[in-house]
Length: 238
Image (cartoon, rainbow, N blue to C red):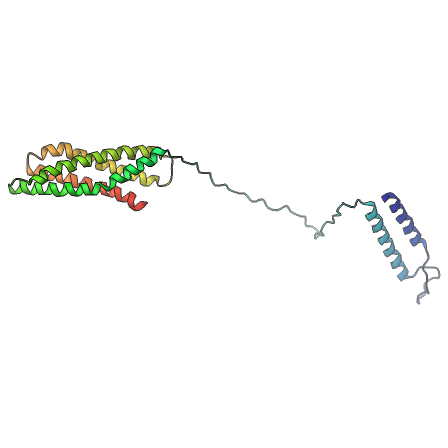
């Protein structure tokens, strides 16, 4: 069907181009029998229209004719610039066990008992030191409470050392707050070592002289200060 329509359009185009122009001859000496200028334009227009009709009939109905855009001379169409994308490294998920949360709860609960124990140890020990320096007998309540407070402090630090080191190892791959956790652990271990030395070596020597008693107290106060700094670091940091 499309071939027949194209042939018909071609025959009609040839027939129109071969027909002489009708109408009067324009002034200016145009030879008789020659087609007028307006007629020639009409013939070209009719030829163009018939050609386009033939092409449109011959082409499939679902085809799309693409006409390239006009480009200035000397210029070519460039492909769009490629943008290099930098992908951020994917963080590895850190999974904690159920025991981690239990140990954190124990660690925090015991840490709140630390300062009251420090206060009891300091008050009772200071009363004993004053009594020894003045040559009097220390009060019974101070002699009874001081070793209890010291033993309770040792138990607290032992339990928090176990729970803290265990959780520190389990969370070693977690980058969130890693530096703070390591600093806290380092200070806590330093305080634990100071309490251990104070409660063993210096406690025995404190029975010999007042000078040794003062050394025992000073080491205990220094260890309390380091432990309190470690506790405040985690408390205020969170």
